[in-house]
Amino acid sequence: MNVQEIVGFQKELLNKLLDYKEQNQDFTFLLRKNATARVKAGYCFHGSEEYLALGFFNELDTKSRVPTINLSYNYKSDATFFQVSYREKTEILEKFYSEVVSHLEKNVKRFKIKEVKKQNDEKTVYFIFEVNFDEALKISLDSIIPDIKELIEKHALGSSLLVTEEDLTRDMKKLEDCWSNQLKNEQALAKGTEGTEKALQKGINQILYGPPGTGKTYNTVIKAVEICDPDFKGDYDAVKDRYKELKEDGRIEFVTFHQSYGYEEFIEGIRAETDPNSGSISYSVVDGIFKRLCDKSKAQTKTSQLEQAIQKLKVDCEEDIELATSRGNKFYLTYRGGRTFRIHPLDTKKEIADYPASIENIIKLYNGDNEIYNYSYVKGILEFLKSNYGVPEEPEKLDNAPYVIIIDEINRGNMSKIFGELITLIEDDKRLGKPNEMTVRLPVSGDEFGVPSNLHIIGTMNTADRSIAMMDTALRRRFEFVEMMPDAEVFDDFGNNGIINVQLKDGASFDLNLKDMLNKINQRIEVLYDREHTIGHAYFMSLKESATIDKLSSIFKNKVIPLLAEYFFEDWEKIRMVLGDNQKENSKRQFVIEKESVKYNDLFGPKVDLGSDDERKVYERNPEALKHAESYFGIYSEVS
Image (cartoon, rainbow, N blue to C red):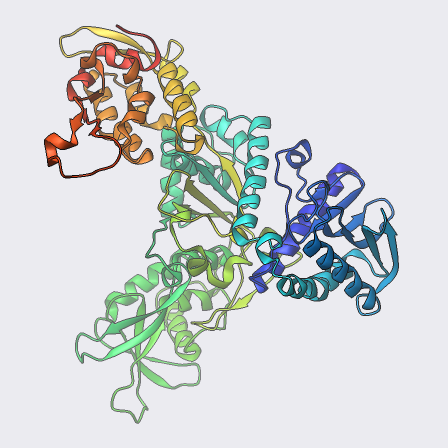
């Protein structure tokens, strides 16, 4: 195998393991941890260009370069073997190691092992399989690993040997971040629509992630238009106009996830409807935004004439209209608002018989989907629309046009709760029409459902949001991640290499190097905190049209300083360091002023003990500093 084939093999193996984990929640395994050249090339596991070493437990031997208990595969010889390798000599580990080897030796037939080889004074043992890698992997996962876990439990070694869920999630994120950074280095973000096309990847599921104010939502507009109308060219204003047109046509949908958002809003749910006349309550299945867009992108037919006819029928149905099914069973049709018509069969023996007929089901039936609720009545409505409202006998077929759903703040929602059983279906190769096409039966409606291959998912993720947990590993691997970091180079578009002329209230002005200022702020944040909590360039983009001291001071007062206060948990000494206040000799030009220290005894009396220190520094924001040029100069250069 060449490097590209090895990377493909390892990525496929990673997907198999994560699929297995979805069915076996306690299952964990080892990944490569360090951003080596092999990791950057796409390797997921230990090993080299000659072999793969898939580890299932933490290393017993700190001197070994591969996991001490692993499933190995030799790329050249196509041989697969289970390896146990141990060199350190501690009594408890020696006993555990011996029992693992002994157990494997006693069960060679059960595990389909054809040969056992020992090296290094019997401290390295190879159990060579008689079957291929895929079968050996299944035997290892289903039989060998559970048996070894029992031995680990017997010797009370779980805390040191078992790979935790947190370890796996952390290492998975390291790999993805490394791959994303490598891609960014190879494919640097360019300016404007053309640059964004080059930078954003072509994956059908992708997430733009980065600190606040880096243009993630801004770029979803560009990306959505690029997908839906690849031949469209123009500046951002033109792109926005085209985006609105596509949204009105139903080709693009936008939704924001939050903590209360659920499966019912995204996929489907049951909604109660009250009859305003009788007061009776009925229940109907209502499709969520994702399912509606999936159905629309699957249909790929022009239904505008049908939809217009339905609108007219709604008006005409304010009073009962008599219709009939294809078998001649008569019923009254009424519309009382919402997304359903109401049906009352004339030959019913019940005093009250009121059934729903969903508008969505009328459209589905028109597009050839017969698996719908109340089929005979829905068909009667459709035939009535064809006969009386000029609806064509069959819908006009369209090209396989792409659709896009944009999910803003995707990591704010409970991903497992929102996507449910569709987590597997959104994978590229499991879409409808793909080689590994998969469908599921939805639990509410009972519909057989799959995700079409022409529906793109674009998400945004704010890396600075500390109110949410890390994204679920099973979902993370189904998206390509595009990092979007602060880019001070965009200020070059303002003219004069990022230097702007800021107008003061008295008519005077001063030149401010916006690029140097933002870079200096973010360099300090990276040192004091991390790169995921930097300040995005988008906060300052409004200065391009008009740079005034009022606008600049408002940005710092209402956006930058409050964001820093959130990042550093109101540690004002660090905030002063980020803004360069600690280097400004003139306190009147400091955004945050260090006041006189407060002595505890003076404030609370001598009998209060508040720790070893007898005083505390107190800080306050200085609104006056926001009005002066020197305050901003002092962020990136020395001022008196």
